[in-house]
Image 1: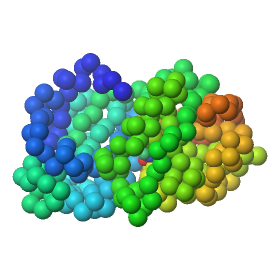
Image 2: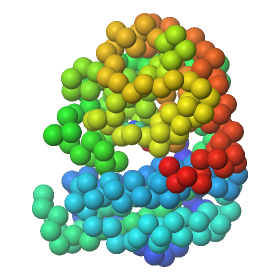
Image 3: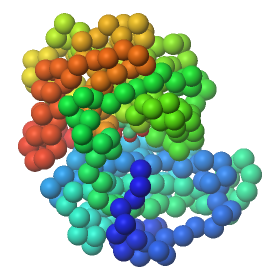
Image 4: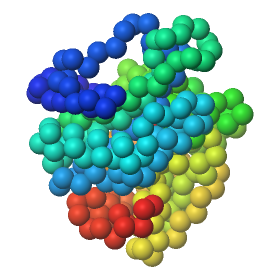
Length: 298
Ligand SMILES: Cc1ncc(COP(=O)(O)O)c(C=O)c1O
């Protein structure tokens, strides 16, 4: 994704200070760079409101905990900083990236003695996938890379280290003419796209993989709630690729991807169907100001 041209005139919050974009620099000797000791959040702002802001900040803390990284700022500190920075940057519809990484006081696998830094950045970012694909859906190519077992990796941490396979999977799919990768897990079950969860519809019912080795996305959880509110039955279960290929509809969900229909997986075509449309509309309505779910702190 290319950053917007005007991003260099924005402000960044870094370790308690608001500074110009051009001054937010770190040294090349940084543990986070050499050993991927970094966790992050991607959030969206709709009409001036950060969607599920506190839940994202709590997940950032949880992600840090899962990789034994101490967070120097509380959830309340980060919440205040995000909201202040949003005002300072004068943005009402935006993407927010909050991240925490270990510094350069030490160099080596051990992070003992390294401090943690935190930064917040934001920019305008309307759509993750090209908007003209709304009616046809995106295409996914099954990747050879698999999501690792939770005994092998901190699967539920939104940790930078886990994205190495996602980047390879997505770029390979892109090189083959697909929009994104479909990733299976270490057992061969359907897991998710490179940066979004996946749902399938069969005979009017909604199915989504059990998130036992990948991120249980905040959008995923929201869609499950919205499906229930809209009288669509939802089942979380292990799904084999063959079963996914028999689906009537497929879509992916994520803060960046929002609700995006899938029109093709490998050689198999799918229609953008009524359940996808209904949940996509319900999500759009919710994030744009209907506050039914904001208040539950989901
Ligand atoms: C690997 C991965 N899975 C799923 C998601 C969806 O998570 P969320 O809905 O919380 O953005 C994301 C996006 O953050 C992701 O990077």
